Amino acid sequence: MTSTAISGAWKAAAVGAVLALAACGPNEREVGGFSNDLLGNEIKIEALKDPAIPNVVCHMAYFERGVVDRVSKGNWFEDPSNSSVSCQRTGPIDLKGVDLGRSGDEIFSQRMSLFFKRTAVRRIVDLENRSILYVSHSREIVEGSAKMSISSVPLTEAEVAATRALQR
Image (cartoon, rainbow, N blue to C red; front, side):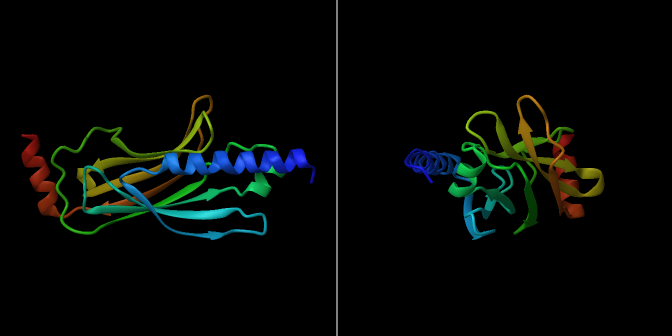
């Protein structure tokens, strides 16, 4: 490896560290991670709290490229947008103040490249089927992506009835 490539690798690592710190917010925290291969690529797992529904927690897994992989591929400022999400209730659910529209509400977004690519989690409430849906997806400015994952959190009849009473 030349000194230019090594210098570039350190710059890529520094930018990656800054992006990782900038991505951290008050509603998520890293709970685990592990090396995926010999190139330093990692699978990261974060716990995401729904800001409007405190008794729901989602766990999202995503891929983070290592420095060696970034240098060898020449795409230093971008991670793949693949992710998976699984959510569960941790207590009673109150939907007061939650967007019940068809498009729901984005509860989490994380930058996957320096400028144009994000991974997001959107919440959609399906009262008819007594469920809260969480969809993990990639969002790119120019071209959308079909990479997504979905998780469903069940609602009780009482929670649905209380929400419908609020709508009247």
